[in-house]
Image (cartoon, rainbow, N blue to C red; front, side, top):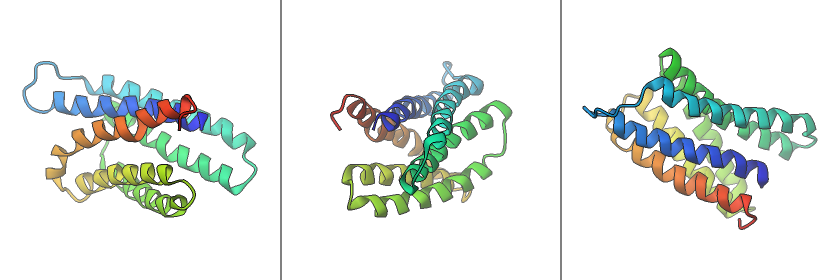
Length: 173
């Protein structure tokens, strides 16, 4: 679980940052965070995950290995996409559609892992909710969800990424 723990450590930190920065940047807060500054940690997180999975791809020898790499790429590209959108002010709708397909994949992973590892299945379920929220808000225009987003980011950053990462990296998982 070391590689997953490493990835989730970065994911947890960046999710909490994204949630907190969303709170800071809403309204007339004088401490607004520049979008390019927010993009940096998203890019670092994305690159850590993608590079780690490119390395893992080199030694992938079975279906499970490829599934792990595919899952990692979905996480990594999520954060690279977010970083690029912040830096280049791109249209967020392609990210929303990407989020829908990743949410569907996450639900499939819940079903496939539930009998094998309930804790991992619960994590997939939490991540599915976050990706689905992205689709609903960005593509379907459910703007009321934007009030939920920062809370969801912070909660998932802590409970579905950071804490599991620390447990995985200390062999307590």
